[in-house]
Amino acid sequence: MKKQTEESEGLPVIQIKHANKSFRKQQVLKNITVSFGQGEICGIVGHNGSGKTVLFKCICGLLYLDEGSIYIHGRKMHEDMDMLNEAGVIIEEPSILGNASGYKNLDYLYRIRNTKNKEHLYAIMDKVGLDPRSRKKVKNYSMGMRQRLAIAQAIMEDQDILILDEPMNGLDKSGVTDVRELLLELKEQEKTIILASHNKEDIDVLCDHVYEMEMGVLSKIR
Image (cartoon, rainbow, N blue to C red):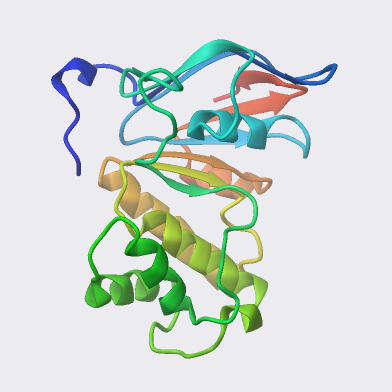
């Protein structure tokens, strides 16, 4: 696990203070203040359009807040850092090369910031239940296989933060069980995991803390 700087020790991994965000006249985030700690799985539940994905995009630096602040290990988003690069993220449909295999997709993305490591990527694909030796093109993958590939993308660089928007989408019962076991394993490695899910059972099984997003307001319910 990557070491924190001395200045960030003792601080929450992610700290959000009085976050507000609107699109035109619709306020999507309303005065959100919340912290997420190391070695925790935190769940956010809420209907489509409640603001969950917008909050995740703001944490990642993909959207700017209108008011308020977001800190990652004590560093302020859009002042001390432009984007949250040190995280594994699933938000909406991941970018894929449809005419390439699953392994080729991971290899291309991994080598943007790392040297080639075939053994590591093979192990990651095995971990999420994909055959790394398969030449099947990703455009021919089922929805569940694509979701497994997205999870592989999120974990392949061993980041300390995982932000996962509906990580169980498209998975069958076996796939859901596999991903739950994987997330609990990552929690034991002291990862900070924030996930949104419509599945109450996922939240009950996985999460240390649970929040509800309703019309842009975030409330802790457990």
